Structures are given as C-alpha cells and as structure tokens.
Image 1: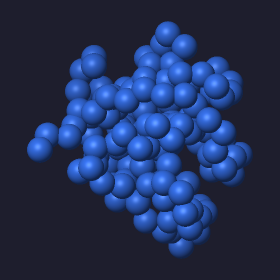
Image 2: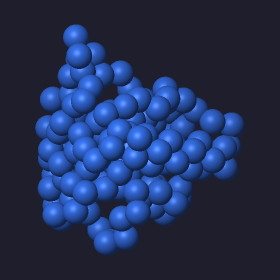
Image 3: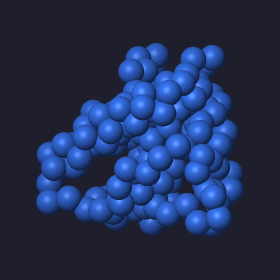
Length: 135
C-alpha cells in the first residue's frame, strides 16, 4: 500500500509548550482529527515535506508519535515550518504533504543530544524538499 505522499489539513492547537521554548524548534501541533485520520501504515517517526500556512508554502520537518524523550501518553503530530518567523500558529489552519521519512522516534541521552538530532532532521528536510523540487 502506497502511503506517501500523504496530504493532511487541520487546525493548529496548543501543545506541551516545549518546541519553541525548550527545544528552540517551534511546532504547529495538529488537532486530534489529523491524528485520528492518519493512514494505518504510517509509522511513528520524523518526516519531511511541504506545508502551506497563511497563504505561504514552507519546507517542513514533522514528528508523528508519542515523543519518547518526554514519555508522552498521547500521540501527536507536530509540524516545524522551516524558515517561518510569523509568530503563533494557534487556531489557524495548516495544510501539508508528507513526502519522505527521516528516522524513527527515540529517546536521547540528553536534551542537547535531542536538539542536535532535531537540527539534523531540519537540514535533511530542507535538502529533501529541495531535491524533490517544487511540490
């Protein structure tokens, strides 16, 4: 079964407040309908693609899962818009297409190690969407 590319759209809701503040990587946390409608075969992990927000298109890195570093009990979809500097996302709609897989989710030995992995994910996402061409 072909899962990617996969398109979704939904409302941005408040998350745990860690992305921008603790990790230096602000994320748009998607509402529960996005999570509930993910295809069965889409495994948890970190992905890349393109997202449209407020009329502009951005490369994105996103996580799907339980964020093992924080032992979350609720599955989340968190989108990081690369090079977005427009402030809060809350209550707005975001549309995205996932085009590739980066890595499995896992726990890290330290917060600094997690930050390093996130920076690498963002660079892979930036290159991946450039190599895919204009989506």
